[in-house]
Image 1: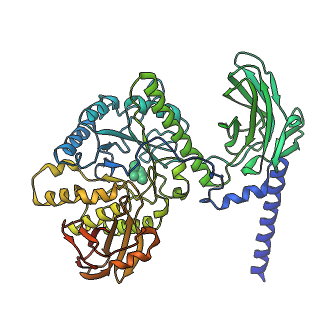
Image 2: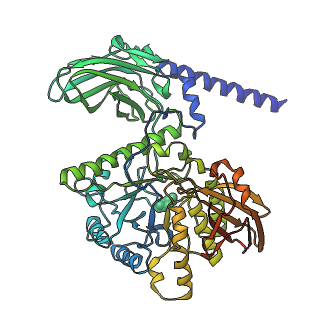
Image 3: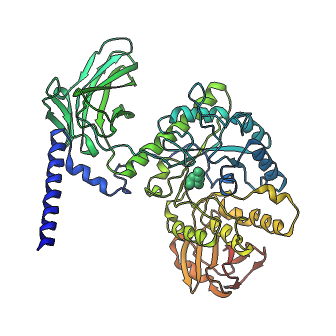
Length: 571
Ligand code: GLA
């Protein structure tokens, strides 16, 4: 009985909390039911169908290079990076296609410079990142850099949320050609929007010439004029939260130029940061309202915007419903900043543009394979790789299923290679590399390549894996159509991908700890529509690891524990 009373009491309290919250939302001019949609955090609700693919002309095939993170972590400095660049050249890795030298976390000083710009650590990168970039460029290589889409990076150093344009311009001015954008210390954009009393438009240096108010607003969705008695005018544009609706205006502006927009909003119940977009002639301008005490009910938020002479279409809205919407907007903000930064830098200095390959690293949290191509060149699909077999195979399994999302200039990123790290056997190193090539993954070396300059048997094996031209050709195939799992035989996964010249790459991956044999009739390939194979008689079968050629209808092979066999088949 007592138990029942407790349950009923909890239900009653929950109901009271819900009703109070509901009533408070409505009183502030917000749509409570729209806010509930945020409970599906990984779902992108923003309509991106008409957003074109991210187009900076870079990384049409998956990026190849090296990154400092997997082996060096926070112990990097300019001498080490130069040594790495030299080793990339002397070992033949650069000639094999690995051109990017990517500084991961910990290149930066914890203090921005006097102009607010990011700067290299003053002790470990004393010559500055531009000088390092010039040295790396002189070796025929490119320099990449890292920041986080949060208030700090994963190693708690300065990051780029809120300073995207400045940081993108800084990177472009240094000559950076790759940028990895992490997700640590991220602060999601709020789906909540205060009720907007009015927006004044003033030419810079003058008083307001136009007022956007509830009286001249047109609305879509649930957005409408609401009464808020504490505000001076007693009314406001409400129900703009969580994409509930929009308020829009068509106004005539006398001359093109910069204008100040002063947004007068309802400050009450400002428990957290809130958000509004003011979209002018299609260009998004963002307004952030601080969390605050709200001693007075009516607040002001100001931004400067560009307006054109004549008709201007202005929309007030908040498209953020879920966490994924927030990530999309934040990652896109940086992507757009990078495109403008490299273009403007080249134009201003009359130099050739160095497009910045843009790499999203939000660990697959908001399913970036669904929207990454609209925002950047590559997107991490999982959490961090580690130098062990379990981690590598778990990432492989997850990433493989996402094959449909990879295409030229836009690829799934199953993270950097661990070849040569940890206790991976030579067979495991070879399989890891092969699987990444089959998946059309970026090939970013994560080992200390300086160690490869020593002439040892182990190094010869590692280099023969990493510089296998035939395998790299599969990864870099211009069709950029990654492998699909087309079958399974016991412990063997059968993967295949179509290639630009009509060939097919096929891989047999033995996941077990035992040696196995495979017999595979290549006629089966005709049944897989994805591969586009119409005839298989007289096919040429080229072993991508032994470089031997066969003319057989059946592939017969022994596969080592955790091993692979991979072939290029020409019809
Ligand atoms: C995250 C990323 C890693 C690496 C570190 C650096 O964990 O996923 O790839 O960049 O941060 O701090």
